[in-house]
View 1 (tube, helix red, strand yellow):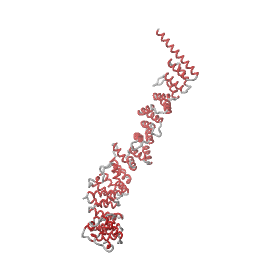
View 2 (cartoon, helix red, strand yellow; view 1 turned 90 degrees about the vertical axis):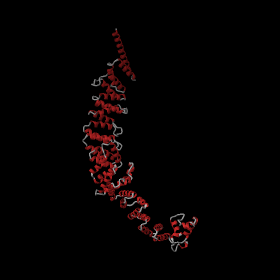
View 3 (cartoon, rainbow, N blue to C red; view 1 turned 45 degrees about the horizontal axis):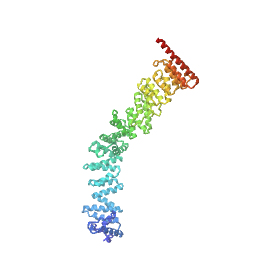
View 4 (cartoon, rainbow, N blue to C red; view 1 turned 180 degrees about the vertical axis):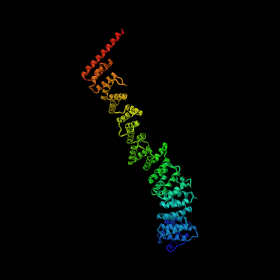
Length: 580
């Protein structure tokens, strides 16, 4: 029987060679042999047939399979013959027979659903997307599920995607094809197809399907998943609108944004009006639909969405500036500045310099001083704001300038400068500054040098207005080893002041401390005070001289000890005399 293969075709239904060819081409180990043969041949015999078949000199397998396909095609009386013909045409095509392609397309035109699917695949690989899509559509209309999967996973061009979507969406009798049409419409938009963008907007404006967002898979998603789903739609619309001057594309996007009420889509609509049409008024309308300055939680939610892209940040800043909401404008310009946008820095400085309201400047300064989750503190901008407000006469601005310098995170951190601004604020009537000064004077982290500098400032500038603070910091300076503070205190206690009375005892202690620190000028004052104070203080003076190592000081110690004892004896005798 095998010998007749090379000369003529035999009946395909009963040809063992037909099934051997099919099995070989499919690389199967067990042949698809008809049941009549299968009953008579064991698997070992089948393998033996294969070896004998391969060894024979026969016509090319591709041509042989093509001829078998022709035989089946001509038997059109049986519907199954077309599908069997397709199988052999496909086998022939895989083995290099070029004529089989035309035959497969012919079967597709004849209405064979599987052939339509195969034709779509062949033409798709040839990049003939339009014809491929037409065959796939015909198969889908005949309920061919494989063709649906083929279209869903293929990467056609934008016009073809839209053609498919348009055709499928017109057939609303099947939910699966409608969903497929929507997904193809989204693909077309993502590829910049203008007609698809308009059609998509019309779908939302007509709201012909109340479950459109569900079909798109947008319902019940978290924010990240939602943005991922929306990304091809949004990017496609932006590209289409960029090149559209008819206004139709932006209108379609507005319809989508209106029906699908999500902050991100409204932001994109706003962005497109501002970026591509430079229409601040229409952009602001969309922006203020989603932004309520009085709702802080909503502001925070908006901020989280905006700060994901610098374009959105700048958009928000420009719109707030356009609406003269300078605080929020500076907030978003500040965020853009953190994204290395140099123009935003100039914008912030321009807003500060142009402002003539101390309240506005203080609000701006507080924003930059405190920062928030998205904006890092910027002490330079804060200082600029407060300085401008201070020039306008604000006492609160002086207080805030003190806070700027008093913050150790500021690279210009300087507590002396902070103190000067606090005191300036106090002189203008700011009560908050008084609390800040008390905290600064009580701060244990002040270095010895800081204490000395602060004490000197109070001695030179604020001794009259604030004597208690002056004494507090100078005592602390004196205790920490500041000779100038100790000597000053001695003279200060020797004089009468409105709030601080003369006190010889305090003066004596101060001069002794100054002398201990090395002041030779303190000794004459000690001598004069020794003749004024009581015996107890004279004994204290004697002990002080005794603690010094110099011999002449020891003589002074003995002298003041004797003076103390004489004074004590005199007092004792006087009391005894008065007792009599």
